[in-house]
Image 1 (cartoon, rainbow, N blue to C red):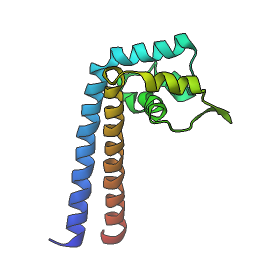
Image 2: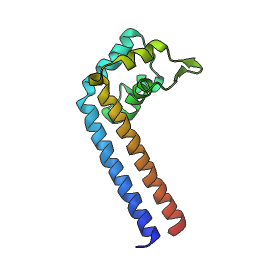
Image 3: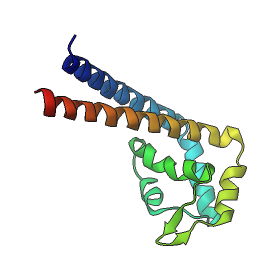
Image 4: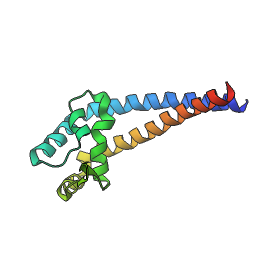
Length: 137
């Protein structure tokens, strides 16, 4: 097997696996949609900080789940975020999300990790295809 054949094979396999993982993520989000709705409604009720993309995407279909959950996953991990411009997220927002029990937030963190793996595989597959096309076609 030649180098170009290996590259295109790995790229295609990586890309196809990423599509399957994205579908699995969709199913996981659908199973936990009620948990997500309660989390976001609790955020709104307490007037905690939400970014624009999370606010808007909460009205979209479950296929937008990576955008919907990334804000919460990053807050949970303690990443220093800014709400608008230079306005930092309040400590109360971090404290609330980090105080949630594993039962309520664990699914979201695991799904975010799955989304990150999916993104790396999809981008890697795409880059492999671009390299193959540019150098070996």
